[in-house]
Image (cartoon, rainbow, N blue to C red; front, side, top):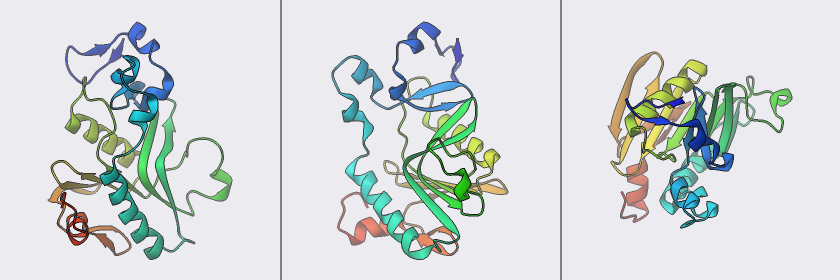
Length: 207
């Protein structure tokens, strides 16, 4: 059996073995976390393509971050990865990141290959959750993934949540902060973002 964080909830091996690997978004502590909407794919009411992409709001926010980062960060010091960039922590943990910022002295050219990255990002930025929550909760998953990233060596993990319009900033040496997303949030090296204000300035109803 594959243990679930919710008491009484488990994934039987027989059930898990019937689910194609392409529907697994991440593996944490040996447990698969399936993509949001994977049951619709299994029921053939949706295709894989229907559940793979981000919403237009998520894409708009990611574009905002990438513009800030590519303009503001020294390309000799940092590497920026996006598009569900894969992280291999160990044989029981494979994570995906919306935006990962690496120190180029850590992610050196000899460590760049056709596999998941095996070194920690300096900063991890996540926009919403892309997993099915039937056997876990949003908070449990976010806390687990955040702790895994920090223990792996990330200096900061930042979550931007579009439904509650909140930002969670987590570091290993300070209390985790939860903010309204109209606050200025520092990403790295003095580069700050304000998602709520950016959406408002662009006339978005989601500001």
